[in-house]
Length: 616
Image (tube, rainbow, N blue to C red; front, side, top):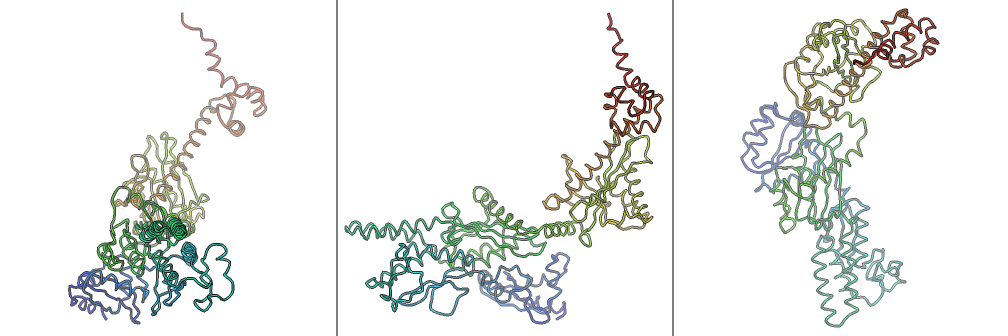
């Protein structure tokens, strides 16, 4: 279908909730979305693309046709969207890993039911719990539940293996009641399994309450042995509920989400029970550079919770996902009770969100290589500045002066986000006299730098992808004038500082200011470049000032010519060191006659001060 045909088809859709599927020329589903009003949402894709993100523009360019499914409510659209995403795995949707990575616990339907770990639901009469975390954690938790209730974890089949052979080691270790022994009650076994199922459904508090009531009734009836058994089982379940290594979320009443977007994206979920950490889950996922936090949460939260049978009472999100009410309604229907989904703004809960974000950030950074981090920063910088591609070479310039005769400039080079110190250059300003002039100095530096490149000097090749000038709009405009005289079109940005002398923004020669403080990675990179350029300039200025001061002091010594002055400079380094030297030490460098003249000259003021008599 042409774009006009797609636009016309979208315009004929009703203003009803539903799900839409975008397909390419092969019929493959490349994107699944939901909408409160299908006509409005789908039509937006085929209008002016200027407001679209890069991901949306690319997706729309591949759309050949689309299909829609109407539903009766927004929460139904949410559930259906999640189901279709799982089925088609569209390339332009944010996807969690496949369900095969999330184990389920299966409770068989038989006289003596048993637990097992499986990858997915099956069309049978068994009960399923989950999906839970990784296989290791799920197996560990299942073993802990069975140990707390002294249920079998061996491979024996009941009832045919009852009375066959001796009980296994678990019985002798006190981890199992030995259900393979004759005489144990089938009803008691089923009751114990029902209690284990209640634990896997997160109903530990209710179960403990019921068992406590049963224990007290047994004690009142003077059946103390039975009461003691229940007491021990209650203690084991209580300890189980407090173990942080149990399946994440097994006993949680609150889930706190954290999202981090860097070179790699990661979410972290902290599972809390009565204000205490019961578990943590983290997972890396892929998302486009321009995807915002709300869009990511909208996709992730629905995919995470809708397949699950175990749900918390409260879910805290760090940003508005746009579907909190629909998600809350869908999860409440699934849980058979109210599940609150909201975004706290302040207080203790907001603090927990920050802790979850730090967990996500640490996990993402741990899994990110230096090259991936560099690539992400440069991609963000490219997007913010509108460059055609990520810069491979950036050059930064700064002017430093203490007087009109001591004006110097620094040229600092970055390869990507790393300094290339072998390519650094420094300049002594020659054409500026009378008083310092930053603009004229910058004009001279760039002219000399570009001329050296035009002459084929390999020390000044290749040309940069970006010029970064320490200064504001006028500095950038000055640099632009120079590049144009050489017929070059190199992007130029001035580095604008705040009151603390930190780069707060970039500015174009046309005066367009680009804020960088909102993105910490780019802010850090530009700040680092600015500081390094300033450091290199001020270091050269100080060296130049010391040499000039030394040259001035030695020029006045009678009998010491240029060659001997250079010898003294190399040997002693500073005027202070020369002044502190004895005449004999000077003689070993420049000879006795010159040493005597130099010593007298350098100590004339000291001698005259000693002879001066105080006023009476």
